[in-house]
Image 1 (tube, helix red, strand yellow):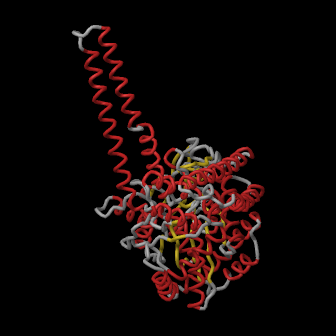
Image 2: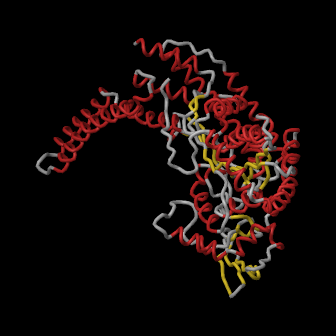
Image 3: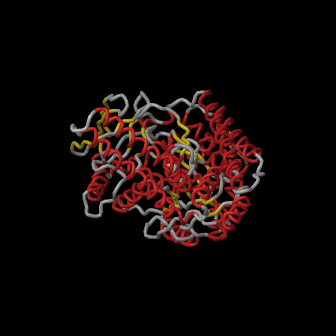
Length: 571
């Protein structure tokens, strides 16, 4: 089966070629920097004990405080405990890249625990104080060749520039509409596959109950998360935790950033005390020839390294102001434009204890604060946050802080779900091949055919316009000749099946979009099964270990694909 492949590259400093390299890097960091930082061990231990309170609160409210989580909480208080971390926004029905980070940390923890003979815990921070503006916190995509751009989008409307944990969970009607939409999508895809199979002389026998059963299992998780959630951030975070902690059985510890960031007074104060060095390093980075594209804005070096939370649910970005030894921050709420001026006293001894519950780290300062405060031994990042991590690493090193290994694992999962199967069968119907590596030439051939017909129609159109502009031709003659030209255009469209050609060209674009899409977790739940998805990722990491290559997942459509492939090849 030749579908799609992604060329991996190891040029990125946050991408390890394989799991063994990552394990070795973590061991080196653990035996090196962390072993030499014994004087910080008591502070780190204190933060971890404080963190456990907020972790327990999250899991109690989510309903995932099971025996695995309890065991991990006990490990967290062990002085020799090794700490692995990841974090993400609570996205709507998060795509696989968000949840697979928990799987990589799970496998990494197992390996490090066996080699180093120490307890290992994995932590997943929920960035529930991020703004609602990002598309993926309120949008989830499913592949659909019949839809515009090959995507079926589930949407949630939320006000702009408001923190996610200040937004109400979706109304009941929205949840019901999503369920209805997904069920309809499933039914339509299965019927389409049945029709396409008949065109190849194959009877489609995969029962609808197979995918519907998988979906119902998933939706039960959604319903329980919804019943327990207080706000929109919790709803999405609870779905994630229930998948990771209940279905997959991981001992991953979850916590809301809005709660656990309150334990980092010492780390926030460190950045304020060293704001001059922090700012200078950022300014140098922003305006150097080695500037990192993306990430923080160019005036980040003027900004206090945390947000201040407005009473309206928005956040204020604070510009730093120095007056001798004192430092303050001033700025407007990005939602309601309320103005704030905060005095932090002397940089030698900044005061923030009174506002700890009203501040949150910025994207660039978050890793500096968490890595130092919790003694993080490895951080699993995402593709979208690499620029911030690079910038944070540069600044941290200028402040004398050492970053742990950071890894980004984002393969392309290749599998045949209902939409992928429909797309490939549609492609085979147009091209008489299931070999998707030939897609570029198939697309080029259709573009050529459409272009040739359009050119013929356009030539006649130009003749028509010229005739209409010709004042030497009588009105009656013009009418007859224009009618004849229009009939000629109609005949060209009919003889070439032009509307069909145009429709197929559009579908070819959608087919490519379907095959390249990184869909939300619903697509995995329906087609692969949630538990099977985790089992595959664990097996892939344990047996293959390649962090750059694509992975192939099994579904109930695999045998059908090979059957139709044999029919197509026989033609």
